[in-house]
Image 1 (cartoon, rainbow, N blue to C red):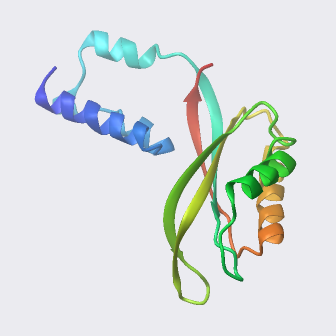
Image 2: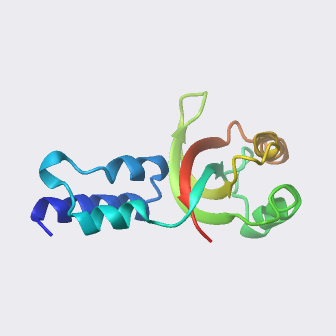
Length: 156
């Protein structure tokens, strides 16, 4: 494997490790100078899976009156609002982030991220995701819940 191929492979791995959804596929396309060998091309094309939608929801945990949402409160929320809508599964991640609210103030806070993958045939998914966002904003007086969508190749 050439230096350029290794660099491309490292970029793809880093993107995948960071969860940069749709960008992974674009990063995997080699440049003419770094074209993979025939076995590498066959391996890329033969990877298992099918295309599904992926949605990430980013939830801030700072309460407007002060304090922070507890893990138990967030679990109770997912039990009530997420699990019934996506009983086949989802992933919950915890992180730290920042955002600027409509008042112009930058807030740094603990965040929760829910990742859901679902088939294109799931006609209720968009409505259910929007209901989760609405429920969270109402329940915890939040200004926003960030949503990102991408297409992923998945295999179970």
